Length: 480
Image (tube, rainbow, N blue to C red; front, side, top):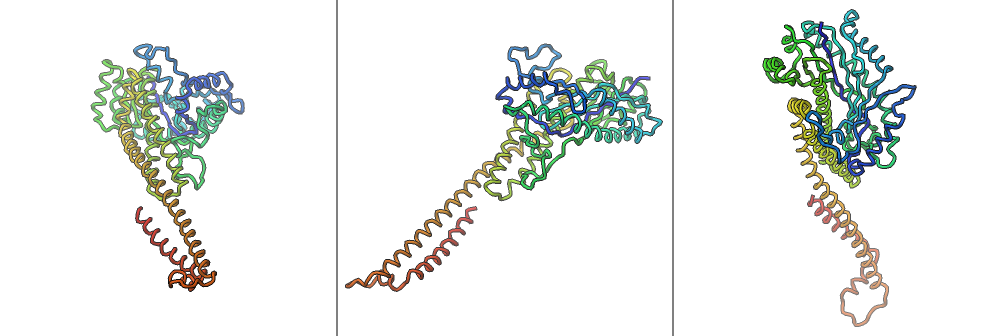
């Protein structure tokens, strides 16, 4: 009996991101940093546990061929890829996978069906991306014929993958990623290529603390699955394949057209792959290059979808914050955060265009399909509209801060001038009240000064000052 495979990739937010401005400014130092990390003992975790890391970022060499062959992506993909590194767990972690996957499978299917599922050794991989995103992936062989994978079975597979993913993401994040990220930061002591914990430029939503001073109240905890993207890899197309397709695929397009696509697989190997929203279907062996290319494109699409979705929500909250009257200090804080988010968003969009240009052949095709299927372009368009609105708000904030400063300065000058006039009136009253009478003087200012005592003159001055202040303050308010 031909084996079927159940592959699922789980994205989650993590406490790791890069300062890309620093990287672009000091590319040679950035490459040397990774060389030092590779030569270190960073693969050794606490309690004698080990992992194997594959580093994908390096210093871009100007003299290397950008395209080595027709099949190979542009070399810029390696230099500026959103994927920073892969972490492959060793036997100690795979034992946990075997034990926990069987336990969760038994909960959903029953103990008698546990033998129908088996973890594929060396298929687990944790991927660390640039901007607070990571993924973990697993592959299991399913000893089930196509006709056995009924609707009830699919629901149970969904529940099992959800429960198992929630446990494994939490465990892997606490026991592998956190110690590994902390070790990475220990090498970065000069250029600040890695963002400090909880201080991620452009992503203030990553959980840091519950301080009331946080401007963005929306926060997400690290190490919790965002979703589970499932792919069913069918080795053999038999009489039950099309019925399985109808049960498995969730699509806006006609399922008859998808079935026709698979019937043309001999004309083009890409026809063996259907990439959909959370449920993908593939025909062939799990080790086929075309299937690996599809998985790679799936990881990239999930990264951009998750990151643009996060930026979309954060920008929405920032737009709401901008309509509230705030202090000068809060205004400065808001302006700084807004400029950081716009910078990071624009940088990711440029990176998205570079990746689109650098991918080749099957990877480029599958990535384009996923961008359309997952409407990533629409999310990017929404983000762009919000960025435009945020840029307008920056100008408004500048004007509000300037007006506020101007009003404070005017009020200070008003008070200084008012007290100077009061002091002058008091001095004038004292001058006219104390000297001896001046003979042959025409009745006028001197006589009034003698009648009004200095204290009375001060009270009259204060009353006039208060009346003028009220009128002046109302005029200032009318300017808003």
